[in-house]
Length: 371
Image 1 (cartoon, rainbow, N blue to C red):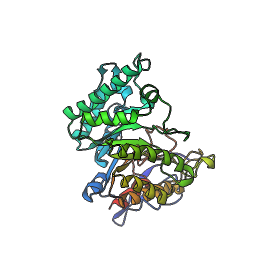
Image 2: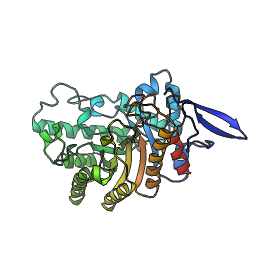
Image 3: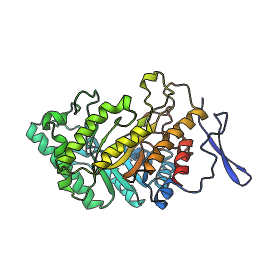
Image 4: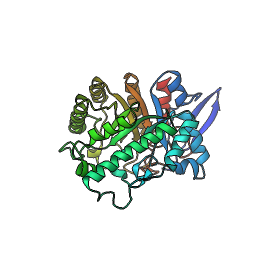
C-alpha cells in the first residue's frame, strides 16, 4: 500500500492531516496539535505516558536526532528495549557493564523523565557468560541475589529518584496455562519460591523502590485470557498475603486487530473484563501499568489504510479512557517510538508515530482523550 505520509495543509487557519495512502480523512486526526503528550499528562495530573529508549536509535542511526527529540518531547517515562536487561549488564559472575543502562538513565535524568526498569529477571534475556547456567543451585541463588543488589544499589547511588519502578520478574506465568510457573532456569535452580526471593531481595536492596510483576495476556477477554489471569491472580494474591513487598502489576498489552490471516489468533479487548480484572489487583493494594503496548494492524499483509488506522486508534482510545477512570494506574508505555523501528518490523505499524515521525491517528486518540 506504500508508505504512510503525513502532510500539513493550511486551511482557514487550522490544520488538517491527510494520509496519502488512504482514501479519506481518519476520524482521529482533524485537530491542530498544540501540545505534547507529556505536557497533557503532567498538566492534567494524569498517569505518565511512555515510550521505548534504544541506544542505537538515540545515538547511532542517521535520524537519531529526530528520534531523541521526539522521545524527550513527547514522553515523561521510558523503558529500555535491551539496555536494562541482565544480558546487557551482567557480563561475569562478579562483573557488570552499566554503559548502556547508564546512557538510558542519564538521558532520562537530563530530560526530567522517569524510568521503568525492564527487567531485573527475565528468562528471555539471561546473562551470556560461560558457566551461568551450570552453577550449583546454591551458587546460582547467591549470584542472582548479588546481581539484584548490585543493580539496585547502582541506580540508588548514581541516579537517585530516576527509576520509577522495577519489573522484578517478567513473564513467569506458564504460557500453556497448565501450572503457575513457566519452566525456566530460575525455577530449576531456585525453586517455585524464586519470585518471593526476588521481590524480597529487591526490597532489601532499596526499601524505597517500587516493585512490579509483569506479564502478557492476563488482560483481554474472559474467553481467551481468564485461565492465565486466574494463575496470575493466585500468584500475586499469595505474595500479598505472605507480606512479600510487591507494589504493582503490569500488563504488556501487545495487541492485534481483526486484520489477521487466522481469525482464531485475534484477541478482542473487552474493556469490562479489563476494568474488573484491574480492580481485583487494586483491591489487593497494588498499582497498575500498561507497560509495552503495541497494536498491530497488518498481520494479514494486505497493507494499511484509514480504516485500519482508525481501528487501531479506537482500541487505544478505549484503553486510555478506561485508565483515566482508575486512580491506581501509574503509566501507559508503548513498546516503540516510530513504526520505522519496532521489534515487530516495519510492516505492522504498531506504535504512535509513522516512519517519518509524524503522529498517527492512534497518537491523536490519546492526545484528544488526555485534554
